[in-house]
Length: 201
Image (cartoon, rainbow, N blue to C red; front, side):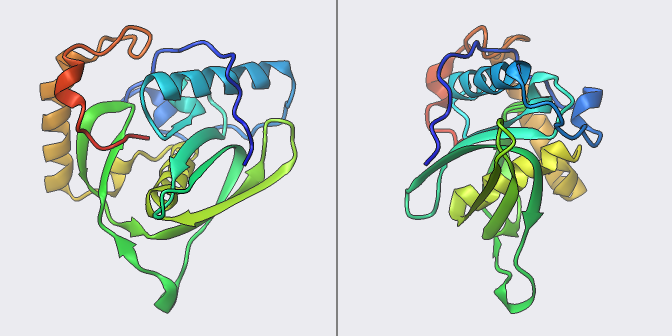
């Protein structure tokens, strides 16, 4: 399993509604020091927010890039960095939907059911330009799909019916006072009331 960098700085998380969250992001073409610093900062931010994945546009950067540190259905931990991800999903009789709870660090605190295939594979390159491939089931499958969606300008709310989306936004609005504008640079307020929340991406 690749080791994620540990020397990054925590950045504010960009919220839904910002333009960079809702357009196809730019492919990564420069694999130099600036990208390595961004990856380290994204890992630090994901960890500070107690998430399992984070895309570059969630820290305001217009690049097709995400980091993740996420268990699969069996509790096996997977982590990595993916630039320019390509998603592969099962089709036909191999396609089974998981209607689990989903949340997003860019709409903090709110969760709802979102049906997704229970297996996913992502290919791309890492922060050094080396080919990578990750696949799995359970929460890992959901994470790989969620983060690849981000690189294509899609948030999981785009996949919801109007009723579920309305409910999700109402929950987020109710919880918004707990999340400072620069969260997770500034800590969440009333953190103890969120201890049993599912994980967000």
